[in-house]
Image (tube, rainbow, N blue to C red; front, top):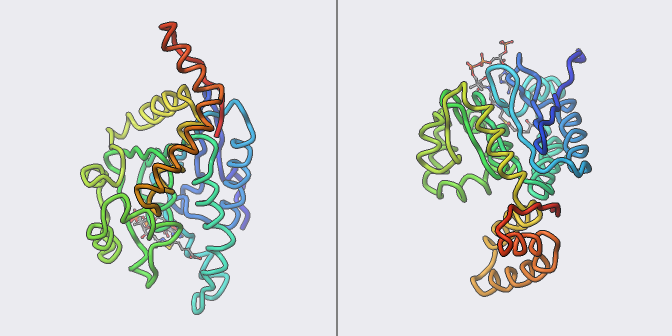
Length: 266
Ligand code: T3D
């Protein structure tokens, strides 16, 4: 049955576009329709020069429960799920889009994140969670491996041992513990989450967007490089940034003892 409400709510305050997954009754789990709405919302945000940071959050008590298992099972009567197609069609493009997104991304995790919902949050540059939120690598419970970037993101964030423990035991990880182990940036009181995410996003929005995006890309790329290759890449990226508006503006503002006004995007 088609859902009447928009599946992604979009709202902008100053340079911050907030996208809210809006399937609260199913804990904002991903259907093909939700993927489509999110893709459209991301394309719109990427194409709008006034957007300098994007915040993702969920409507209701959950953040995102990963793949909608009813839809996945319904399509294939639950006996032979063709998961590869779903991943290729929806999740890989989503994670690639986020990884290449021209502005910083913030996850405001308002409640439980499970399965690909965790990967979706961790694909953001900064993850802030409500103290009552939790993170569940639900995959092992249904005979799957972490996907939507989970096998790449998890060990990089918390190390192999913790990543394997989280993925294999598939137990809910409370947000305060997620903060302690470095899975997320921080957790805050539930009623402070929206304001904290907005404030963080506004700080990011005022910074040199192109340099922030290049930082994400250089750090991710460095993971596959030797130290010498990484420093060569830094030289290449820095050479390009050094001739761009934002670097000239940053240096001029520093010397003139005034606040810089950045405008380059990634
Ligand atoms: O094609 C592919 O599948 C490939 C991609 C795979 C990527 C994946 O994400 S695989 C992992 C999928 N996600 C899960 O396995 C998580 C399933 N959900 C849960 O384990 C629990 O719901 C939670 C731990 C997240 C939350 O538990 P709780 O007790 O707070 O809530 P609940 O009662 O279980 O859920 C509330 C409602 O949301 C409920 O509906 P109802 O009974 O009130 O009508 C429940 O069925 C629905 N819901 C929650 N998660 C999903 C879901 N419906 C569909 N799909 C879900 N993933």
